[in-house]
Length: 189
Length: 280
Ligand code: SF4
Ligand code: SF4
Image (cartoon, rainbow over all chains, first blue to last red; front, side):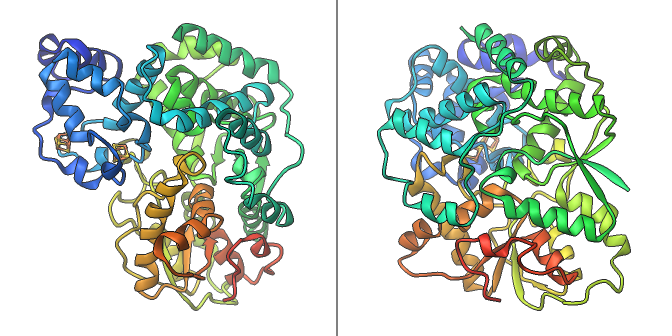
């Protein structure tokens, strides 16, 4: 890390972000390029440059809003903000950290329920089979979100085009993959 | 010659025509691809959204297996997997302290010396140098090359092409006889991560992409990522709803176009598997 000087002046959420991701909130000078390029800005209550500004305030109440925001879940980690930021601030990496923290502290935004359910179903599928089993993923996700019909219109077309596997592919060392999961998730608790 | 192959989950399921075309093209060019044995899913967006350690351990296991199986260089056709693998290799190289916990979690050695190529890099390195005289059926159409997010970003780590207005796929299309057009959405996001959980966003993001390409006269969209493909092809219904009109411009993988130009038949390249019929 090049400028150690910054580290001592950041506390609160900004300090945590710095510690875990190396992102220095106070190097943002609010040019707004990240928010201008972000394809999801319009669906966020705080576009990326706002998040940066809030971190700079080190105001606990505002920080709480970030952890409870829809913003962090609708961010797709498309990396557009990072690639255009004149200060090379790794916003997507910061978003990953904020999401993880938000879940861990039970603060996930209720509107993000479906998005999170999808990520969870995805990981559960890998945990058990080692690979993503698309049919299993969809069934599991549908069960979690009660949106049974939404994507089912695609299924017959996918089947007839050989795009759906009826059975999951199982890797040999499945137990090892499950072990990776239990180790990493334990740490998170 | 031989190269390792990490197909990833999509290429075994909903995007199998991508695999078919990759295998057909490499075979035609005398390259044997050896699939990494017992590979696991890279964790994709879900893992790094929810759990950092997992998002590194899963790709690291894949790289360790490649090492163990003596594969010094692997090709990763899925742009998302390519991104995850490359970022993991980079993170571990930059933070050696991660290596211990990851090798412990995976129970496998990790040296970090496997070369990782995306599909365009593989073609540029091993196929285009010997292409002369082999293009027997030039793909004579106007095409919009769509790179998406993960093939070119984050540039600092991937070091591939340019992050704004990349050119590598356009050059490959030129060599295949096509006419790549200039357009504005080459590296915009299609909304992949929200494909199932927020289809309306995908309709908007992918819709804007399709609209620009079509307005500028593209006869086909060319991709190198299964996520981009399924959003622009399988989710065409949501796109048409968003745009309020029917768009029938097909979406092809770069390898399918190269395959056609090499004279490989359409079925071998899996063209019949697309939702939007390829009638060109
Ligand atoms: S682009 Fe970078 S410097 Fe500009 S507002 Fe966004 S984070 Fe701050
Ligand atoms: S990574 Fe997230 S915040 Fe950055 S541009 Fe993409 S969607 Fe927006």
